[in-house]
Length: 395
Image (cartoon, rainbow, N blue to C red; front, side):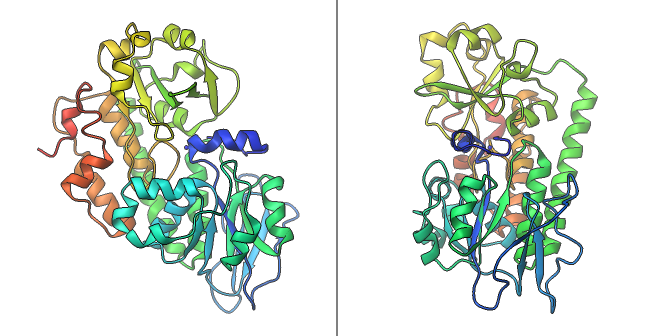
C-alpha cells in the first residue's frame, strides 16, 4: 500500500500500509533447477520483467526478479508461498483462484477474512498463514514444511537469505510507489504460473483505466482538493508521503497531497506526523486506510479535528476493502482510482463504480459480488454520513 525497496526491517514494518512489499518464497521440488543464479547486469528498469525465453515448454520457465536474480523452473509452479501482504490476493487474481497458494502472511489472511476474498474463495481461509512475523521475517521451518516451489519475499537480503540458505527459491520484489511495480509483480506471477497472457490482459485493463482517469483530470485542469491519506490514525498518526503509492494516485486523479507539497514532510513512505501539522495542512478530504480500525465517525466525533475543512464539510472516508485493501498497490487499484475520483469530484449523479466493480471482479476472479457484498466492499454504512456518498448506493 509504499515502502521503497524495503532495505531495512523497520522500513518494511512501516510498509504494512502499502500492503507493500511482495515476496514469494519457494522451495524447489525435485526436478527443478537447484538454485537461483544472479544476473550479472540486469538492465535498469527491466529487472522485474520476464526475459524473452520465459515461456513454459521444453526449456522450462525463467523469470528475473527485482533484485536481478534469475529463477528457473522446469514447469509452471503449483505451490507458492507469499509473505508480503498484497501478494496472496494478486496471485489469486492472476490465477483466477487460490489453488496454487500454499501459504501467506497473516495480514493477507485477515484481509481475506474481512474482505471479499473470503466470500469468493472460502477455501482460501484454510490456507496456512503462520509463516512470518509482522516485519516479514520468515518462519523458515513453517515455510519449508509447506514444500513450496517458490516464495515471494521483499528484496531485503536479511529477509531473503534465511530462505535461500534453507534451499528454497525466493522471488525478491520491491515497491517504489508506482504502478509499474504492480505490472511487474503481475508479470512475474503470471510467468511462473505458466499464464503469461494473463499479465498482458490485466495490464491492458489497468492501462486503459489509468488513461481514462488521466484524461478526466486533464480536462478538469488544476485546483483539485487537498487529500491526506492516513495509514495510521488510532494510536499515532502516519500519513502517505513521498514515494508512496497513495501519493501517486492522489496526484493521478488531479488532486494534491499536502504531505508532499511545499509544506510537506521529509522522508518517504508512511511518515509520522503530529496533530498540529495536520491542522496546518487543513486537508479538504481525509482518507482512512484499512491498516487501522478508525472510521469516519471517530474523526467527526473528536473535538481535536473540528476545525479541519474535511470534517466541517464531512469529507472523511474509509477506503474500500475488496479482494484486498484498495489503499496499497494491487490488482484492484483501477477501482481505487475511480472511487477516489468520484469522491473527490462528485458529479451529482449515481456513480458507475458498483457496475464497474462487478465487471472487474468478474474479470479478476470470475465472481460478481451481490448488492450486499458491494455495500461491504465500499463501506456504505460507515461512509454513509459523509458528503456525496449516496452516489455509491445500490439505487
